Amino acid sequence: MKAVRSISKWSFYLVLLPLTLGVCAWQGWAWWSWVQSPPSSDRSSNSEVKKAVQIQIPPGTGAQQIGQNLEAEGLIRSSHAWRLWTYWLKLQNREGGYKAGTYKLSPTEPLSSIAEKIWAGEVMQLSFTVPEGWSLTQMATYFESLGYFKAEEFLTAVTQIPKDKYPWLPDGIPHLEGYLYPDTYQLSSDRVSPQQVIEQMLNRFEQVGLPIYQQGQKQTKLNLAQWVTLASIVEKEAVIPAERPRIAGVFTARLRQGMRLETDPTVEYGLGIRQTVDQPLTYAQVRTPSPYNTYLNPGLPPTPIASPGIASLKASLYPENTDYLFFVARYDGTHFFSKTLAAHQAAQLAIRKQVEAQPKPSPSS
Image (cartoon, rainbow, N blue to C red; front, side, top):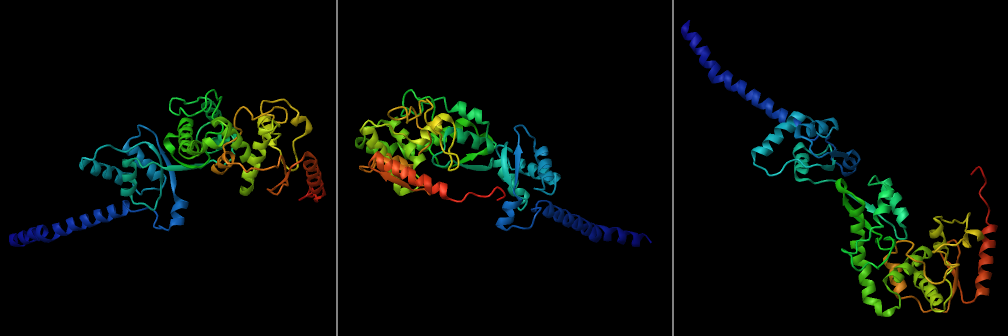
């Protein structure tokens, strides 16, 4: 009987115990393989973009809380597994730790990949695009709509002229209108500020716009501020790229002859309005005094009225040599150019009649 018991005991140690340990190890490995795998198995690019989650990790957030937040967002299967992986990272004597910031993460990523991103601080990259011809006010509204900062913060920041860092900026300018280069930019979303946006845009003007003027400065009598101001008006007037040099040529000829520029965009800028085909500028608006009203004031307005792009900057430095002194918009993007006031007035009348003859949409449409 004792021999049987002894055999049973040894059978447990030799067979059942290793088997039990093996089953436990297998179950543990199966659990770990499951919890560290992506919650979503669909890895197609379109699906990943759709399911990507933007998550904010405030400064001072502990590893355990990060794991709980990730689990709540469906980005990892288990916050317990996250804690174990954090211990593993620390056992490797890895420097640093999980970093605060805004991250764009996908449930198609494994736990280890998400942990590496947050440990390395691979914060989400956002892009913003400022089109050619936008004013500071339009930029401010746009940045607020993106949730970057309040419009008022931006409009205050652009009145602080960083001459120490950008000595090429003209003296005495009241704001940075015209010098924030229109382009597409990348930003780290966890540290977006008006100053950061402004510096990036000034840097781009310094890289792209300023060399154009420096290389062609001998071709013009305009100083930097006048050049950018003229380019901003060309930007607002021109729609068809091929017309930019001619429009710049008209304005250059008028300036040379001492004629007022008489351009609508400067009036709109001064009044803070925008005309349309249905609501053009009124006579009263055109006669309203403003430093920017080029119907009343000779020469260029006191500052640029928008951010000109490279095409308008070049056109204003190398305008077409033309006898045209007038132009009027056809409302299809093109302009009719005239050499005399009489021809200009006739073109205005013809275009006005053409617009009035067009059928008006019914109230129900």
